[in-house]
Length: 523
Image 1: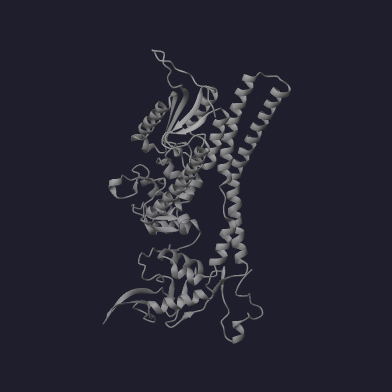
Image 2: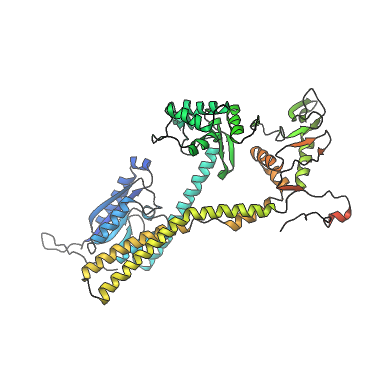
């Protein structure tokens, strides 16, 4: 691309290098980075590049603390408006490197095409890009690496969040009643001195069973409980507050498969929290599940003694060659005393006989599809708005072309000015629409995963962590299982979603299911 240049002449009449207009765009991605030397460093490098190339710096745009993933960047909008309104004067946009300009390949080339339509080329102060074939190749490679770097950062962010959550650190916005704790405290959350006493009181009063949600909410509202924006809690928010196990000191993040005790102090005791859950769910005198922190005995609390009906406990017993793990009944009964290996081995055998019921997979598919439909509904409005906006802008461009080319109702300067403005709006709208379109769920992959893992209950349990084992046990045997000292007693306590395979009593059963029973697989 050739650009008109201003030929400069020195005082002695000798010719100097011609100068063209350039604007500089520098950006840092987080508020914290605005406090270091990143912006001044970028700016100095860009200014030095312009001096070496003989470019006249017309304007500088500083983007502080904004992400490269969105077109809502304030200074980027100003830069595009400046380039459009100073068309013919601006010949180059200079950035420190391409990651400062855009991290998504689509965004990069959409913005670059918009600048090209204005007669403007993109230049990097630290990378060899230009309008030659080699420069364009380098630009494509560097833009791809910018997106790769962005994807890696996203993966690292998720990995960092998962690692922090696994260590018991809360990584999200503190819930009402907590504040972010200072780093030196060694905790992620600290009680809010103004709100935490009222949150505690809400739990304790509701746990008595003498007051309804509305009464408790009215009480703590009168005492001054407000959101961080100073608003009163609505009944829905208050209901979610009463079911949030974080207030009992536990972190539950299903997205990461994490459920564990947090590194912060609870606002309510476990007994109080689970009493509240019993009331919320309409159960009477039902204790909440106790958190078992010892990974040695995952079946503790699940398996009951047939003789006395109480849950088995567990311990390590001393022997001649060391210590040995046992599950056993309480001292008053003593009907069960079995090694950990034997009981857990028989439990795995029980799990191997479990299969989803005939209609369960259909139910799973239905639930997954419902979740998918809900997700599509969430992004559908944004996609539809972006599509309508893009069509409306394109229609304006078409009418503008008709007014200039066919009706000759406007002059060339007005036509180009309006055309460039609409092209800018269309480019940004198309970028927004693209960002919505890539938000998709792999529904087929989710369903294939469910079909693959649900029939393998025993494998899932063996490979799971303690917390995952307890979740699976609750799923498969919500009412627990019974052991008579030698074997599990087959009862109808299995979750309705699963059934036992028919016992293999004859060679015939090994090849076909008896009449009246569902097959060992489901469609």
